Image (spheres, rainbow, N blue to C red):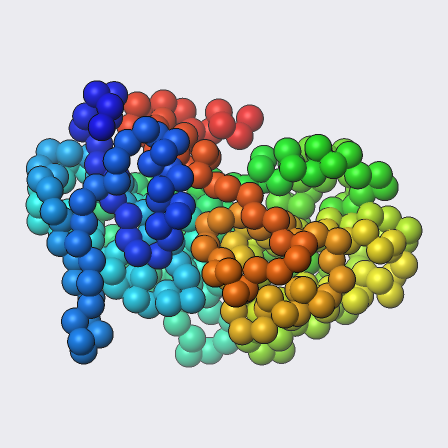
Length: 316
């Protein structure tokens, strides 16, 4: 390990080893020695294989389709770090699990995002680093500092290089309107909004589009794509409103559960652009899928936190 990071240790859970390796390479450090396993009954086990006393620990664990196992493993790693006298524990969770459940939408429901924040806080940590939360107000669930990163500059750089003509950035719902507006401004593009209702989980109905999309090139932007029912329904609606055949989809978190990959492959998008906050297995990849790496942004954020430098200047 370089002398520059003599007091830092970077540990990785089992959820995304490829992203861990990319970040470690960016920083020029080795990944910390950590033993992870499961008992035959399914219980998780974690043990540090090196001294962490007095060191500043960063642990990366994103949420995948095995989210409950991912979270339990993260809790155990954090507890092991705390009991091993780490000077500070920084949790790097590119995709924050349960973020969609950030409020009560009906009586007798849990606020699951708040529950996850409480569980993390009860174990004890010093800082959370995450990317494009489903709702900005989730930051307020934590007493600890939250570095809420965004993939916006990565998408802006990618699409600026394409130099697309007659481009309209489309927000699939009110929750993405602010993000879509910022991206549209960076790309000098027009803006449109979809009006979406959800009669039940993983079911979306597009009832209207506000803005001119006729004969336009479309960039549909969302924070995450789960089963892809919403975005494929949106694509059909956009076509009914007369857009051209050049329709792009960009999303930060490619959850891609159930039939998502098949739906996206057949939907007719010109290209589907995602980041690697979640690892996409080879069997879920398809023609037209483009994966942009978050490793440089995450690595630079870790570096600046360790050096006690500004994070916000990365996005100006």
